[in-house]
Length: 175
Image (cartoon, rainbow, N blue to C red; front, side, top):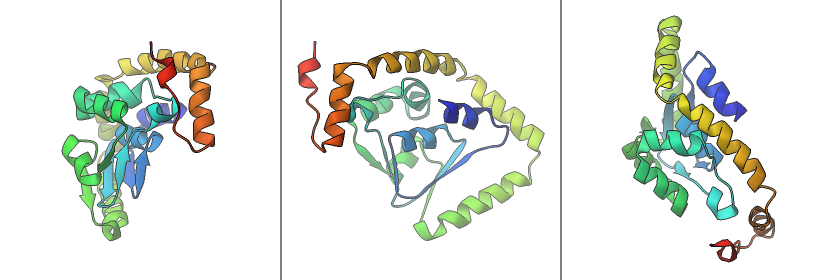
């Protein structure tokens, strides 16, 4: 939650440079960044529900604003993996480049941003964030609920299964 706040509140644009896997928390960070550049071999997705976890704020509600609610639900409910090209097409990535060009492209974007008015960029960022600021409250409530959930037997099953490298047995918790 603190990292989410830092990304949103820092006045400077944040660029996510994705090489390899952006799964779970990495996927959330790629979504929260102002801009995301991915290598062609990057992989995006969620895994939380596989092990009994979720990001009940920016990782769900803000992701839905970026990729659309149906796609966000698919990502969280099915926990599938998505290619960099998929991420680009759904709006999760701004640009996909060959792996050997990733650092150069990110450096060029950083250089371009440094040539812009820092005050204008900060105001633009605040304006973009204003449209989704209500999610901060949702996130706070969600994180409090998640803290309570982590004390349950169901959550413990997810952690134990992960540690034992086995599939969790969540069916017994279905109501």
